[in-house]
Image (cartoon, rainbow over all chains, first blue to last red; front, side, top):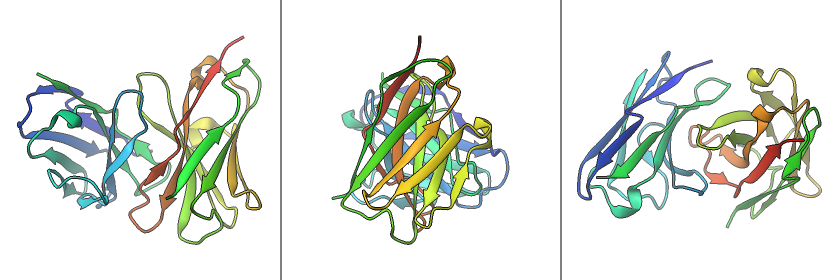
Length: 107
Length: 121
């Protein structure tokens, strides 16, 4: 199985901050990397697929980059509604696997 | 508007079998270029993909479940189901069904609301 490792596991940030979350795959997954946002008690929501393509309706302050084994999710200016847990997910090779999550908390 | 809705028991005894059903509205589970997946999440933990089924009935499972999982289709009802056998407390989780279009890097673009399942005697 391909292991996905996110860092940090949690972070504290203020509204307006630029936030970067990293996801590393245990082997190359080319560009088959997706990002989800999950708020407490809510369903995961697809933000970005194929490394950098924004899902319809997702604000442009979210962006993704990377290839191979190293990927990043960036929130250019953190908004109150962005405080949540973020998961990366590789769709290169089954079994699909997720990172352990990064919790973004209010500073 | 595509919607997925899980149904099934919320409490199951150890060693028993769990069966959950996902009812799809606004889309056809028979269409091409789309898989239908099951994912679970224990409380406070990360997501785990369990397996998926294609419109023709072909399936892919997570080997970590060691043949305990079966996913099936009922095209007449536009539903797909998960069967998980030999349950233990470790199977306690919220279970989600999700749509997985092939176009779009096999990301899960639509999720059900989730069904909380507790395994306890």
